Image (cartoon, rainbow, N blue to C red; front, side, top):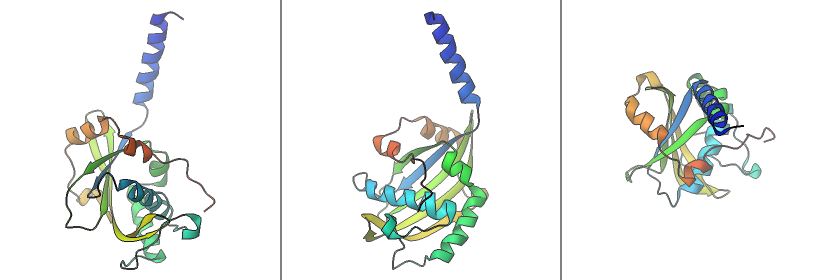
Length: 191
């Protein structure tokens, strides 16, 4: 192939790939320091990919995390939260929706350690908030991960969201190593 043919093939692939489906931004805000974030990120992934998406809380013997003794969460509450969560963020979006994680670190130490996640659909110059959830952590730990104190799921239609240019800029920003680690591997079904 000539260089021109290679360039044309790459351009065609890029244009056809970028036009398929929605692009999604998983924008996380947290008051956890970047140096402590790895353990919290693991707990976050368990909560997001298991507790909220499936309504299942794997046992800590299966390497999972658990509820904080100071919180009000239990398996019935997780089942209810999962149903609300899936109303805004269906399983296919959370598992196969090509979410692009980005983290904004804040210095708000008045709150317990938390990760607030806003999921945006990006389409050209528009950005639409499709889901918002908040996970509050505790100081107790299981399997090296912080226990979960509380989870809140919000109706995106009743929530203030970022202007489209701000969400698009976050989406286009180059990922850090930590953000790349938040892209989930294929989810195991044997837990």
